[in-house]
Length: 426
Image 1: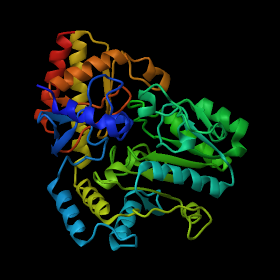
Image 2 (image 1 turned 180 degrees about the vertical axis):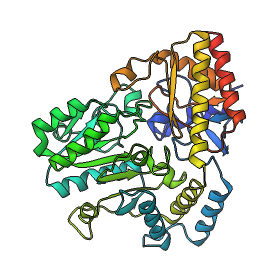
Image 3 (image 1 turned 90 degrees about the horizontal axis):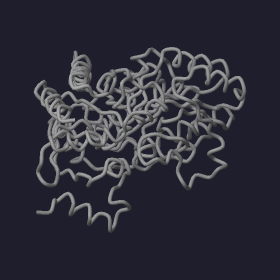
Image 4 (image 1 turned 180 degrees about the horizontal axis):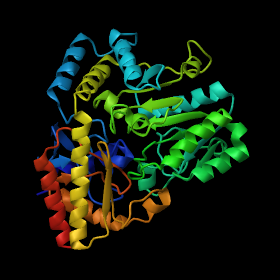
């Protein structure tokens, strides 16, 4: 009997490039047929063949309270009943902006947009407009969306397919991006010493999640802030993934670093397309209609997406929410690591808040080069074995995983038991 997933994929390839609407959804890196999902509830998703999986992708991070949380669904239904969009201001946009500024102390002003790519693209433009400089610094393996100047040695899907830089990006634009090693404070200091007067901004994932999970070294974070301040560059923390995911105040609160600009997405949309960028008032006032840096979006602040985001952000403020979320993620990674040790498998794992990383390596990676030295083929075998066992992980060795508040002790135990069975057979 032919799989419904396979039928849908065969049909999709005739009208959609590669059969998917985002490369990270493809199984090209791990092999096999992408799953087509039809339903989600809590910590579970069901594919087109009605097979249930424990979901550790969570729509790539947004589903922090689980799929189809009744309060989020009701908020969306109520908002939709009043109108799907107006292309004009709404009170809900103001409520969202005020809440973001309240939760993240670095935000003095904020603008809502529709995607993380839009947020990072505009933050870079804003930094250039504010400083009058053109050069930006990013770090190898960090992904900041698919705008031209940021697809230079990028992570996420670009890394998965072995093409860290994209065709179609003019060399003249790529030349304005300097790429350094993540976690290399000395390398960052050398770059500022050489070209500090040219640097408009440094953009970084404070916890890298698009070359798998790589945590920052304290001296690296301190160098970022110190050098940007000294040389008049704008420090942009890309918290599209980490914002409200690692803590209520994001990675900036978790690690105690204050950026000049922040980009947000994923959790703040509650599963619908919503994102934002914001930061220092003097920088944000350079935006049109106040200033000369132009940005616009018909669907910015869409009332349905804002309703989902506001309700999600209300739920994550419950007492003990992040403590429980972190405990679940730690429970998962410690259990998987213990299983690997028992069976002599070179494997390790770690978590930050509700994010986690799995590595077929004897030691935790701290850089792009160390991530690339992990055993990718071992991950691919593990991925498919876990799918067979009803556990859905990201279809790439270069993506972080996500735990939600809907995952139970039983879900974690079932995942560890499945891993133990797989490792015992290796």
